[in-house]
Image (tube, rainbow, N blue to C red; front, side, top):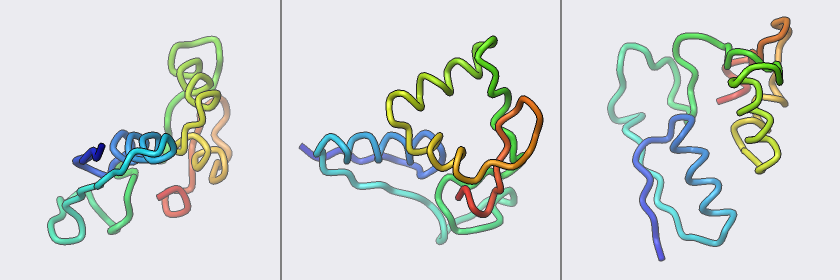
Length: 100
């Protein structure tokens, strides 16, 4: 089986990673660097364009709880976010260049 994932943003990168971890052949298609939008600054995958915040990291709300569930399921995006985290109070904010 082979799966083609369109877009190497947060969801596409996570999807491709999870499939590959399960032994599924993946083709990841991304428009960059051939085509870019005004929001894109780099040619990197999973580029955070507008903000370095992934919102709350608190388990008391839905956003924080979802992040914890993703961590427990082996999320590459959350592993990278935790590795490039910068101080932001109760939010999960990252160094954008390091994250991408």
